Length: 243
Ligand code: SF4
Ligand code: SF4
Image (tube, helix red, strand yellow):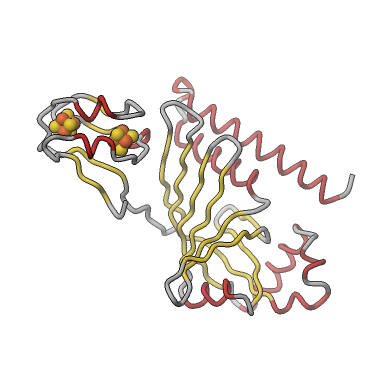
């Protein structure tokens, strides 16, 4: 077996085990370990996905730009990725730095990271570049020898991660702060204007609205579909954030 195939096999196995263990912890209430389970599951899914992630930026004209990046190295508190200084991607990162990274697993999970990418300090560039090239042997084919010096390594430490699992019922979602990042509020909220008619609960595809005064949405099971919002006769449901 080639070294890179072996590494892929190990990464897939480790990612699968972490993911499975995390999902058991998160979804089995008797284990009482939902939060650590989610974090572990997300880590496993990220490792499973580690081969390619989609990175979105905004260019100088305000147009969305998205591309797949696989030259990535993961650390517990940050991840590092490589691009070439001449690429528009690199210029967009240097000008703005905001990036959204999206992955999707075969288990119908979406993981999205909204973050700020910063170039690693000049004295650390070589170190992280060497690590990324050692982990991704194909890069030596793309940038052989010292041609890799056209590259630049960026790091992401702070951001907000959203996890969205459509493969369970009810669906499950959660947001997490990474480093100094903070998740933006999203979704819907029922206000005190609720008259308790129950129309929203009947229209909710996930059954995640519970009776009360006012009725309440379980945000961890909400699709953000807006059906409740449209069905409320007294406009007692508010949108949150930029949804
Ligand atoms: S947005 Fe959709 S899923 Fe969420 S509570 Fe309203 S109807 Fe249910
Ligand atoms: S539809 Fe509006 S008023 Fe009726 S229970 Fe839902 S939030 Fe309350």
